[in-house]
Amino acid sequence: MISRIDLRGTALAPSASGAANGVLDRDLLPRAELDVEAALEKVRPICDDVRHRGSAAVIEYTETFDGVRLEQTRVPTEALGKALEELDPAVRAALEESIRRARIVHRDQRRTDSTVQVVPGGTVTERWVPVERVGLYVPGGRAVYPSSVVMNVVPAQEAGVGSLAVASPAQAEFDGLPHPTILAACALLGVDEVYAVGGAQAVAMFAYGTAECPPVQLVTGPGNIYVAAAKRLLKGVIGIDSEAGPTEIAILADDTADAAHVAADLISQAEHDVVAAAVLVTPSEALAEAVEGELKTQVPATTHSERIAEALSGRQSGIVLVDSLEAGLAVVNAYAAEHLEIQTADAAAWAARVVNAGAVFIGPYAPVSLGDYAAGSNHVLPTGGCACHSSGLSVQSFLRGIHVVDYSRDALAEITPHVVALAEAEDLPAHGAALKARFDWKVPQVP
Image (cartoon, rainbow, N blue to C red; front, side):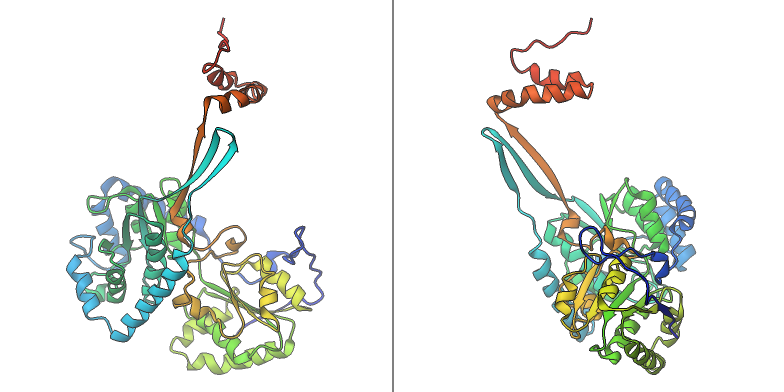
């Protein structure tokens, strides 16, 4: 059901920083194939059409891809209220607790302005300003993601974003509206601007605006390959958080780990999609065999057994055998997983040495599923190895740092000779002349 990759005997050297992220060919590791470039050519005409024809194009693509003919793209306010009224009380309580915990974590991420005195009379202030308007994408498809509403909306609200819009695919079985649980989550969070639009056309709607939806400055949230391609295509017109790909879990474990727990956690992420990645890295062949046995028992008992089995047997999943935990650490740092569990003896110490991961889960009682819903952390995380350079969604994602420079006459006079020298060294003498003009220096005249 799941393949093995034997890296025992492979030399893994520490990085220059001393962290064991290793000299390792990433092609040796399981990874989902995601050809965003190919999808780019498919979404380009869609985005161009939405740019020129607005809502009419969005409505046509929604009918083509989702089988729903919309009269309008915006969800009526009364539909949001109705969805909340009809929400299962247990689900409502769970969402409320998820929101409460997410607010605790994200509220503490708020940035404060800071002012530094560079010289007497000269200061630089870094001022943090929220993006004015954002578009938050919540995927549809095989599963329903009210949790993604929480993960997108809470950090944006805590950052102070003034205008929020949510888009989620229209569903034929719900009269062309997004899933009612998604609508209820929006209502719980006080978001009343929701659009029954998915895919590349939703990203284009946010980027260019339509008669119903004013344009946004930033689009966040996970989606399928066409959403990722549209975000890549329109980056620059809009800001984006990341090009989220298929979900992935990596687990670094030794023989102290419970094989039943490890298997259950691999299954939990494989449940998302047939291209979801589930990777175990371990120096213990006994654990590998025990996990394989657990998978054979647990997978057939799950609701989505066929989907999970396909994900686990795909080239993006596998059990990686290594010589030691030190080598295993090098592997998981090279892999840079979206979600990384550490199930080892002294797990916190090993976790402290992880440098590449979207989120790290320590020990047997912090499974990834907790982070998906109610740890307080954010589950919108970098995928496809992007955790080596990118971060998950946070309050910071919705803030812009603006430097405010305030110098007195004396402070400017003191630094002017240095600025003039640098300007002339770069053959940009007018830069220096702009400072000279404020004092008694004569501005050079062009003959």
